[in-house]
Length: 281
Image (cartoon, rainbow, N blue to C red; front, side, top):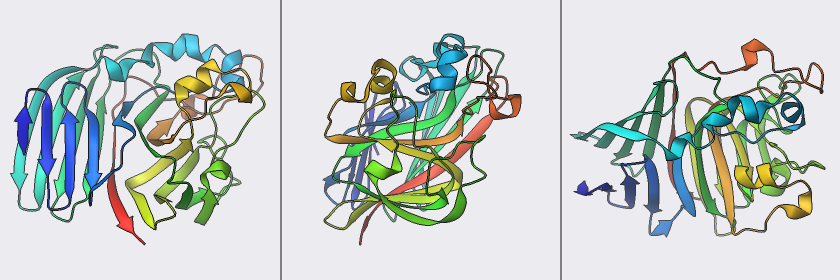
């Protein structure tokens, strides 16, 4: 471990990780000499809206969370050398509702990167989602996963998604609606792997079931575009690795909110984790 100001570097035999401790963002993740990140891995509370949520003023009611991950206030950091790796623990105050976030990053001796996020709640508007996001090169264009599929599923829209191991091109893992909106979520994912033509695969293994989506653009792009042609062409793939995602809603499509059991109250506690590794098939 090496620390210079807010930059902390974790170095293993084949893996180098650089963390901006002021923001909890992993700005570099190099495995076997391959830089995986096109955009940082960071905690995320922002969800692009869907058609039903446009109608129920979702962005206005919950929009305060949109840039929360950019306004974290570091309260405490701790580093430990363990028998099986090194561990960085960071605690942040959130700018909303006096809630807090604890982030743990561990690099183990096998070169795997363990991520764990704990949200400690307080009164405030519901969370749109609780998760993390990153971007990899668009060459990782094939996805395989064990979970519900093969079509998109959400917490209140998943009964028809049967458990299994599925393989798809990333283009088919997402879904292009007539009006750009949140899309392509997959629930109850135990693991997923995004692979390129060279046989490399970025594997994500949940420490509990995950919700995974992936797009060749960002959530902000979805918020701004009104027609598919307005979505940009990029050289990266956004991967959302989420614990909780607000339901689609839609008991009616002109104002009804998602049922209470499919929302994410701010005054509760949530925690989840996952492991990232680079595999050579």
